[in-house]
Length: 247
Image (tube, rainbow, N blue to C red; front, side, top):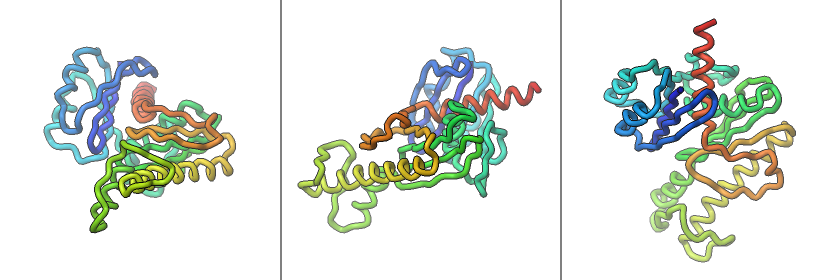
């Protein structure tokens, strides 16, 4: 059994893997390791891997290093991975973005280019060609950042939450903001997908992250929602490193 830990800005995901198959996922607040012990007691892990987008407090690092099985830390630009990282500054690439790229590519290795769109605090777009080269991606503000920016950088606009009425045209200030933010994100994502499909007709697109949106796009046959892309990528990297050490 393998353990993957994806440490985000606000949420940490623990996933148990039996080979390549995810068995169970547990989510906890980032910085709170209370559920980790119980999860490790439930499963007999032989090895694990973690990635983080934040600077970990010393007590969290100590907790990870004291687990009764080896834990690999995914360090972009340092940790061996089963794809080629062509990012010009590989050490600055987010570990979650790299893991997602690996997870998506390994589903169709050598057959399809892949685009991963991760909607969370930020929206990230990451592309791997059919030959397994990570060519880069883009970063855009996520829904929460956009809602807060409209409130904090104006004198009269209220802070609006994502859930609520979304008519095609806002008929109140609240719905105008909500529709403007959410529809703007949908149009942005649809534009990326259509542009990539023009260049790469055999493209597969994976949508992941904590925010789910409805995309009105005709090319839905190549678009998949997959909440396990990052953990699957971490698991693939863990297996790859384990096999590399044995060879």
